[in-house]
Image (tube, rainbow, N blue to C red; front, side, top):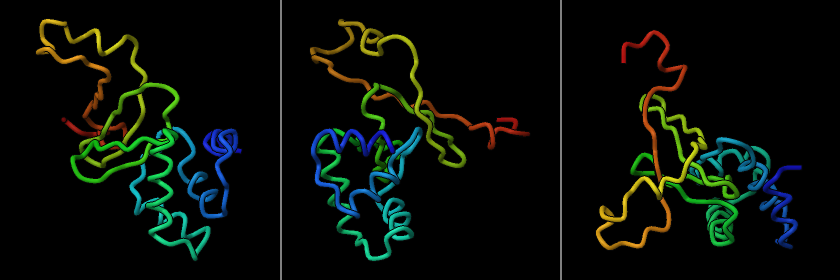
Length: 141
């Protein structure tokens, strides 16, 4: 059983066939799918699932805090089920692969108080960009 499914069951979330399929698709490490990618994969398992159901379910999961919306390319919203442990993202600038990373230290302490311009900073979203192992092979970049 997936971690996301188990978390949703513990919350008492009504588990329809559509919701189960969506949760199964989102489960795992390094999952950062767009809503359209979720719909495409869900339709392979449950052909009658509608795009609206996928969008509505993703919205509910975000409101519940079980999935986070992330944007690393400035365009498409992606859905990240890794909400239990703070993390940052590594993004390949060539193929778009996204990986979760857990660096040590608190990024909030790296911005000194005198540089916060009066803001009370609560979170930091850090995206590291470069080439993944597949794209970096034989590359001079």
